[in-house]
Length: 69
Image 1 (cartoon, one colour):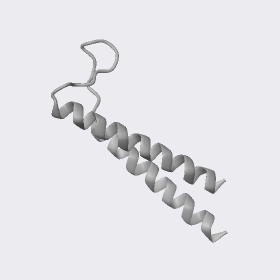
Image 2 (cartoon, one colour):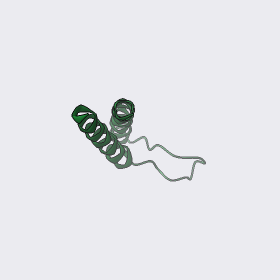
Image 3 (cartoon, one colour):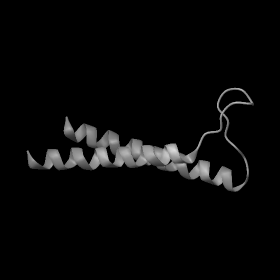
């Protein structure tokens, strides 16, 4: 179970990292990403950045737990 959590956490971390970089590139070119209608809230790259950190830490913690068994 821990190995599966480690693998899923790693790939979710990679996806969040790619999305954070893509959002940051859009911000650099002054293209805001909007959710829903045109006047909706802009997506911040910080949320993807924090998500990537969370999933990478989940992956590391799961790997450490499975290596002890």
